[in-house]
Length: 251
Image (tube, rainbow, N blue to C red; front, top):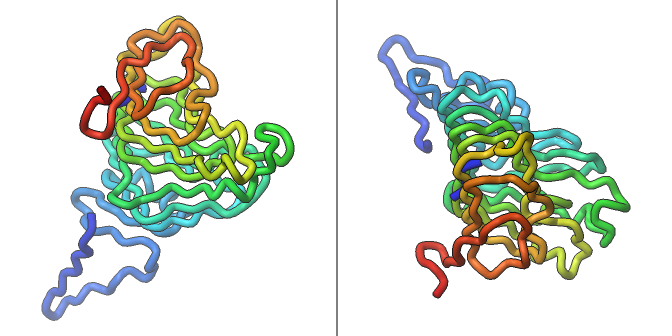
């Protein structure tokens, strides 16, 4: 771990039938608990501050747009369902940004965040085409990210910066296609921060299908440990605590 629903209830009232929402892209399941499902990126971003339980179902993000979830309520939960995709544009990104306090981010069973990075891959990594970075996990406090499956990022996958008490649990970063399709600099994590001790008790449980799991890790991190599903190349300044398969340690 890194420390850094689904039924639509329609109530028919006799002699007082309520009209269904006119916009099929947004369904508010329960006004009291603030549970919302979106399949449109712009509506999800506009409505995020009104929802305690935000479900993103097969969202297609327009070209050149960050799926910006940095205005979430304290304690909000974000669930990715189905396949989340991004249209093509040469720009710096990020494609996804999440921030907040006591936030829970999770992938539902079978959910994929598919950046389709092969459209940008040219074998030149940070050079050549301008390629968007994928996920900015910045300014997250006392938050949890779990069970995300990230597929084919154009360049670096996850940037972690300015966090306090962030757990990343069972994250898969799958850039294996880049081995044969020109992927380069598709590192798993870029860890940043300010000050001598910018993090508290961070654990990363990861499965990375990329030869370079970490792009940058600053000196001075404390209580920062990596738990990985397979032996990793040397990671400077960091203790690799253990190797495991999901649910068990690797002997």
